[in-house]
Image (tube, rainbow, N blue to C red):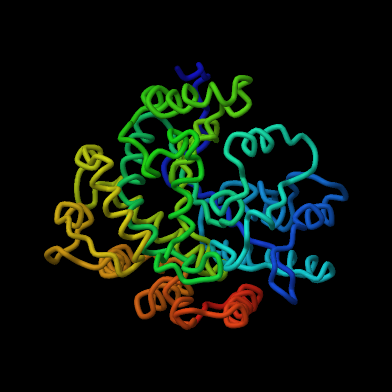
Length: 418
């Protein structure tokens, strides 16, 4: 059974604010090998080894792997407009610090040739009880733990009724997100044929306790009580034999692709790969946010209808999008109708996103986003553009040249042209 928790005290209602987190990998500037130096980056602005610091309106924080650093909104933001510039300034500052160590930041969701077995170094400072528990139970020397970077979008809810609407909308749109944001076509030095390898490995990273991740798309539960009983309660029960001291008995152990954070009254969407620069990340966050808002507002169908969607139907669409990104084919007519798509099934995911961009106009508040959507519609996801820039069996040198271009683009804040 789940543990009893006090009722949350919400600070915000639906869509009053947004929270964004973007993870980046540190690499050696010369070789592009992973550089386990996040602790030194944080020390440079905090004066000591800390898990988190604040600079330029952003939180800088460590992650499990020592070569990953996260930038996040220090406080919930009432708008996404302008956040790309704030994150870009954070990227520039980290790059300046890393340069003195012979390093730089690399974008995308996975390092193209990292060997997790030999290259993984876990965060070594302070109280490492939680990290040690994760490593003991799941063995974090794997792509699904130490070679994945994502952008998280946090959306608030004010009460149980708002949670029900938001959770229904988020889980419904989740299958489409890899078709918009895939950026990891290369793993272990090769093109695997899957466009979102981060999500392909993510699903299995907690295989010792399958309840932790589930099938990535959350179960159809629409109240806090049901969520704690049916999702968190099952996780805690299945984890008990592995974690008898309850070190991981917290809602953040839930590794689904979108998780309820009742401690801060928000749902955190986790299935968005990190893009080539903050401009692209924030544009994607805006489009996803507007799509979820339209669904909660019942723009095309009622929330009750969304709540009736079972996981199997959504999972089928999601799995195709993980493999084929924007070229995934959607055959389910009911799914298309629920998003107001005017044409008959089947359709490509990219065509459905074009419909949503035209219907929702997420670029209206920040015209520079239009370039991101135009690039996506003309050239596909970042994963597709990376794939197009490489030969079928790329050498290490060829991979290095393409990912060096990606590093340069991140530093400059420019989109990647494959």
